[in-house]
Length: 226
Image 1 (cartoon, rainbow, N blue to C red):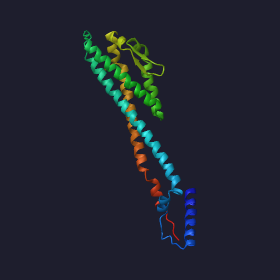
Image 2: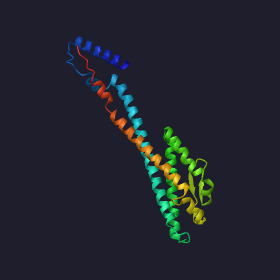
Image 3: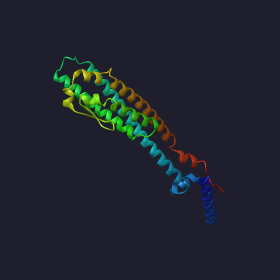
Image 4: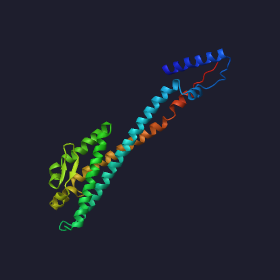
């Protein structure tokens, strides 16, 4: 209402000035005048829209990043499970050990990326998923550290490659094989995180696209006449 009142006052002032100068308004659009001058009621509305759209875009990018990291975590979990399952417990060939260690390192990095993206994201569900993923590592802290994966107080992981390669194979297989509870819990949480991130990114993207021309559509309905 305040914007509408100010626009009416502006229209009256412009019309009075035209009458005093002997010029006719000719039914000119207030939107056209405001766009030409770059001032008036639309500037505040446009500013508010611009800020809102910018905020939505930033949030959407954050959710897109979160979806990407969580999907990558799912991929690394799957690949690690396949490598661990495919190794014979009596086969300690160095090339296989190195490939598994390399894959564990990728999984650790992806886990930390997802945990960090969740920590920086807003929303009740993301807070819940952050705590849940954090607990996945903390609940397995002793077992992970026994094979060379240290768990920080915040839940992130660090890998000691040498300790992992010399760890008891049965412990490694039990923890990092595809049927291990640690791997299954990680995969489940990563799936939920990815689904939620995708939904939020699509919602925000749709929202700022639909509001892009709000200021123009609003002002185009307002004309000033004699």
